[in-house]
Structures are given as structure tokens and as C-alpha cells.
Length: 86
Image (cartoon, rainbow, N blue to C red; front, top):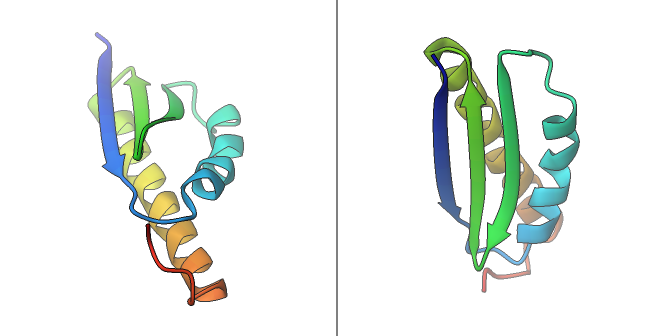
């Protein structure tokens, strides 16, 4: 059985494209064959798609990518705190 999740993340930050570029290398080199992922933008929303063989891999992938998005956003806001979200 296969599991699929489409996750829409609204990013209200001027760093949206940078965040996408930061996670793209992780998508292309996932450490497990049990999960596949993709990421793209539709307007102001980051669309993350996950395909997993089992729910454990799906949960791990979701948690990992959400943490990466949050970490990248926090780092960028720390580096340039004067830039306000659009």
C-alpha cells in the first residue's frame, strides 16, 4: 500500500524562494527509498508532496521537511531582521 500527502504551507516571508532552494537538495537526495518528495510554489503557498510506502516513513518525512522549512525561515529572519514579511 502507498500513502500520499499534499501539504500546503503559507509562507508570508520575503524569503520564500530561498527556503525552497534550501530544501531542494534534500529532496533530490532522500536517505530512504521508502519515501519520495517534491516541492514547488503556487502563489504564496509552498506545496510539499510526499509519497511513502508506509505511515512511519510518511510521518518522518513530514516532520523532517517542516523542521527544515521552519529552520531556514528562522535563520533568514535572524540574518536580515529588518526585512519584514510581505
